[in-house]
Image 1 (cartoon, rainbow, N blue to C red):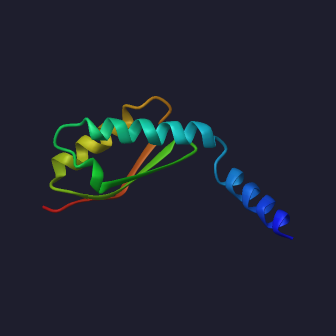
Image 2: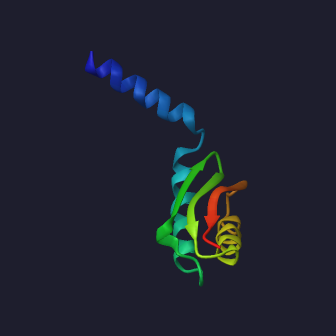
Length: 91
Protein backbone atom coordinates (compact mmCIF):
# COMPACT_ATOMS: atom_id res chain seq x y z
CA UNK A 1 0.00 0.00 0.00
CA UNK A 2 2.80 2.41 0.89
CA UNK A 3 4.56 1.71 -2.40
CA UNK A 4 1.47 2.67 -4.41
CA UNK A 5 1.15 5.97 -2.55
CA UNK A 6 4.81 6.72 -3.19
CA UNK A 7 4.40 5.96 -6.88
CA UNK A 8 1.44 8.34 -7.12
CA UNK A 9 3.43 11.08 -5.40
CA UNK A 10 6.27 10.58 -7.85
CA UNK A 11 3.84 10.70 -10.76
CA UNK A 12 2.26 13.88 -9.40
CA UNK A 13 5.65 15.53 -9.00
CA UNK A 14 6.75 14.76 -12.52
CA UNK A 15 3.41 15.96 -13.92
CA UNK A 16 3.80 19.32 -12.17
CA UNK A 17 6.91 20.12 -14.19
CA UNK A 18 8.05 18.74 -17.51
CA UNK A 19 11.64 19.79 -16.76
CA UNK A 20 12.32 19.11 -13.06
CA UNK A 21 16.11 18.93 -13.47
CA UNK A 22 16.23 22.09 -15.55
CA UNK A 23 13.85 23.88 -13.21
CA UNK A 24 16.01 23.03 -10.20
CA UNK A 25 19.07 24.31 -12.06
CA UNK A 26 17.29 27.55 -12.97
CA UNK A 27 16.15 28.07 -9.37
CA UNK A 28 19.71 27.58 -8.12
CA UNK A 29 21.13 29.98 -10.70
CA UNK A 30 18.50 32.64 -9.98
CA UNK A 31 19.17 32.41 -6.23
CA UNK A 32 22.91 32.78 -6.85
CA UNK A 33 22.35 35.76 -9.13
CA UNK A 34 20.07 37.43 -6.58
CA UNK A 35 22.69 36.88 -3.87
CA UNK A 36 25.27 38.82 -5.88
CA UNK A 37 22.96 41.61 -7.06
CA UNK A 38 23.70 44.85 -5.23
CA UNK A 39 20.71 46.35 -3.44
CA UNK A 40 18.68 43.12 -3.47
CA UNK A 41 17.97 41.33 -0.20
CA UNK A 42 18.14 37.82 -1.61
CA UNK A 43 17.34 36.17 1.72
CA UNK A 44 13.93 37.87 1.60
CA UNK A 45 13.00 36.38 -1.79
CA UNK A 46 11.59 32.92 -2.44
CA UNK A 47 12.25 31.45 -5.88
CA UNK A 48 10.20 28.70 -7.52
CA UNK A 49 10.54 27.52 -11.11
CA UNK A 50 8.03 25.53 -13.14
CA UNK A 51 8.70 24.79 -16.80
CA UNK A 52 11.11 27.72 -17.03
CA UNK A 53 8.72 30.21 -15.40
CA UNK A 54 10.34 31.76 -12.32
CA UNK A 55 8.04 32.98 -9.54
CA UNK A 56 9.57 35.49 -7.13
CA UNK A 57 7.85 36.19 -3.81
CA UNK A 58 8.87 38.31 -0.87
CA UNK A 59 9.44 41.88 0.24
CA UNK A 60 12.23 44.22 -0.82
CA UNK A 61 13.16 47.64 0.61
CA UNK A 62 12.07 49.60 -2.48
CA UNK A 63 10.90 49.43 -6.10
CA UNK A 64 14.48 49.63 -7.38
CA UNK A 65 15.37 46.40 -5.54
CA UNK A 66 12.26 44.71 -6.99
CA UNK A 67 13.24 45.76 -10.54
CA UNK A 68 16.82 44.56 -9.99
CA UNK A 69 15.57 41.18 -8.71
CA UNK A 70 13.33 40.73 -11.76
CA UNK A 71 16.17 41.72 -14.12
CA UNK A 72 18.53 39.29 -12.38
CA UNK A 73 16.05 36.43 -12.77
CA UNK A 74 15.44 37.27 -16.44
CA UNK A 75 19.18 37.17 -17.12
CA UNK A 76 19.42 33.45 -16.38
CA UNK A 77 19.54 31.11 -19.37
CA UNK A 78 16.44 28.93 -19.60
CA UNK A 79 14.09 31.41 -17.91
CA UNK A 80 11.06 31.85 -20.16
CA UNK A 81 9.11 34.26 -17.95
CA UNK A 82 9.39 35.93 -14.53
CA UNK A 83 6.26 36.18 -12.38
CA UNK A 84 6.95 38.96 -9.89
CA UNK A 85 3.34 39.45 -8.76
CA UNK A 86 4.31 38.14 -5.32
CA UNK A 87 7.35 40.41 -4.98
CA UNK A 88 6.53 43.67 -3.19
CA UNK A 89 8.42 46.71 -1.95
CA UNK A 90 8.12 48.27 1.51
CA UNK A 91 7.94 51.77 0.05
